[in-house]
Amino acid sequence: MKLVNSLVMVALIGLCGCNTWMRAYVAVHDAADEVLTSKTNALPAVIPPVVVAPPVADPAPIAVDISGEVIDPIGYMEASVAANAHYEECHIEPATGLMVRVPVWRPSAGNWWMLSSLFEGQVKRDGSELVCNNFVKNGMAVEVMGFCDYELHGDTPDTVRYIVKGNRCPYTGERRYIVSRVHKAK
Image (cartoon, rainbow, N blue to C red):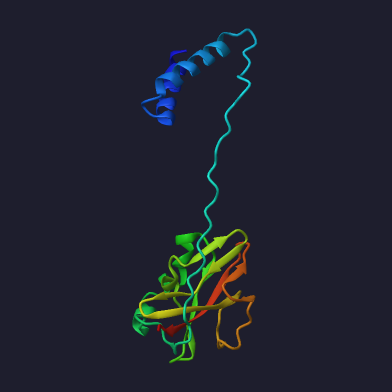
């Protein structure tokens, strides 16, 4: 009974505050004594409901102006991408647990670079969908063109076989490629 008394007192101090805990403690103590000493050991008839805060929805994505010129990703030079190829290819998976690769179009060379680090913190899961909104970073307006399920070798932004175009894609754990390009931010 002493353990029950102590636990009840600590809980009531936390829930009720210092000013009212003593009155609440006495009331709960008396109710607990009645339950523990009754012949039927029945629980009190009224159990207060557990209040759960409603989920907070993510804010609407910020509109990003992607009308600027398509450019190579700023700050990703050929030597640094080559030296960090493993990091760029695999970075998002350990960070989020999502099977995602991020090819970014490089117009100067007419090919794609895997730049997962550019997208760090941008890819999320919303129920059964992957979500990646357009964003601005380091003078770049990054456009998510859509999602595909294969590596883009020999494709251009116009020839990609998309699963879906836009910023949301059905996701059940299989690998997805987030097809993107970079614009000069305005």
